[in-house]
Structure formats: structure tokens, C-alpha cells
Length: 340
Image (cartoon, rainbow, N blue to C red; front, side):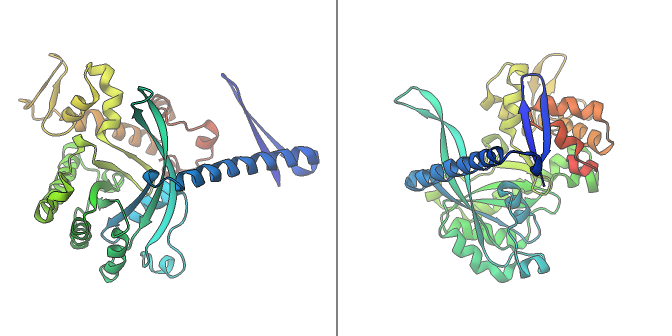
């Protein structure tokens, strides 16, 4: 086997590959020891988090069968969740958990500034088949929140309503994730305004279920992309976004706050480029609303450029988005779908 070393400067990336027999034993020991020390530091950090219950979150992923919740879990944890008979049947039978160390910025009153705080998130992948509803109930009783996954093309199904009702009855606050966004362009090839209607219908269907079984203890559980409790993405290809992610990128363009821009990027809001203002209606039927124009359209341009292998188009977009994909990773992709 070979040992690959990566040396990075401000302008260049250098990659060196050495056969192990050409390396001195001390160098091999140093590389092994350094990797071992990093893993030990990570485990010590996780051990410290586990001692603080305020920094532990248990999250269940619930969905109808074949809506992609296991693929979403695997893309987050980079592990295979289904094992044994589950792989043969192609469905999840038993609930399985995986732990993730995540961090977010929080405001500290003592210091008067924002700092990164680490959390230990125990992600539970529960079955979606109706025969294993008891597994979903058991998982919900030990969780703090849940992610309801819906196939954006198929929409809400019977089992989606069942597991969402179970979550609300167990006083578990849900958020929504519209999965398989890639199907819009790979399979259905929907126009942007039709894709928006499909998303809106799934969100409205979910809100109807939440209003039917709502409990005042949970407070407001309405799903609204402007409130950042709705995510969009593809668990299979491992990418996702919220309206807030794009609002942060457009704040300098529109000269407004992120929260105000989130409200503009969802619903019947249209931007008049000539007058440079937002309107609630448009006389031009071909004009796209904010979500289609400033979120779906750039993603579609990037998607089409990748599938048509137009590197001159999609490489600058990848760089502008700050996706941190190296040239070595891109060169290793033999098919356009691998780039996706």
C-alpha cells in the first residue's frame, strides 16, 4: 500500500504518494501516532459533551416507506444504517441510532459575543413500513424532536400522516424535510413554477395534519420555509438547504436583513429588477416568484451544467458557493451524477 501526503499553501496544493517500503519506520510511526491522537482528542471531546445533558439531543427521522429517510441518515452520518435482512428487503425493520458531533453559534451573555458550542446529536432512523409502527412509537418516546421526511414528488402518504400524528401525540415537535429534489430535473423535468407548487402542496398537507392533531403544549408547529423549519434537498446525493441559507447570500444584494429576506423568498413575492422593489403580484405571467428566481433557478443552472459536463459553467459556481470541493475530488468523478 501507499501513503499519500497533502501539503497545502496559500496558492498551491501538493499531493505526494510514497510506497510504504520507501518510508522510514519513524515516519510511519509519526503518521500513525498523529492520526491516533486526533481520534483520541475527538473521543475526549465527545466524552465531555456526554457529561452535560444540556448538550445532548435525541432526534428521530420519520417518514413513509421509500421516501429516503435512511439515505438521508447515511448522508449525514456517512455510515450504512441497514444491515442483514434489511438490505435484502430494501426497507428498515428496526430503529437504529448513530451519534453526530455538531456545533452552532450561540450568543453568550457573559462574554457579549457569539461562540461555537458543540452538541451530541443522537440520530434515530426509524422504520417507515406500517407493520413496524411500534418501532416508531418507541423511538419517539425517547427523542426531543423529529424530522418528517417527505418525497417532494410523491407528497404526503398514509404512513406519513400516521407517524406525524404519533409524534404530535408524544409531544415531539416536528420539522419538515422535502427530499429527492433531484427528481425534479432528473426524472420529471418540471418547470420551476410547477416545482414550487409541488413543494407548497406538500407543506400545506403537512400543516393540515399538524393543525388536526396539534397540542397547545407544543406551541406553534406550522411548517413555513420562511421560519427555517422546512428543509429541501437530496439525501441520496448528500446536499440540502433552507431558505435562510440563500437569504444570507443575498443580503448584500438586496440590502436587507436575513429574516426579512426569508419572508420574501417564499410565497407570492416578486422582485421587479427595473424598479428594484418587491411586489405581492405581477402582471407578467412568466415572471417567477422569489423562491423560483433566486433559489431554484440557480440550482437548476448548476444541475444542468453538471449533467451536460460543462465544467466552464459549474466550476465557478462551485467556487462561489464555497463548497470546498477539491480538484482531486472532481477529477475522481467519472460520471456527472458522481459530481452531483
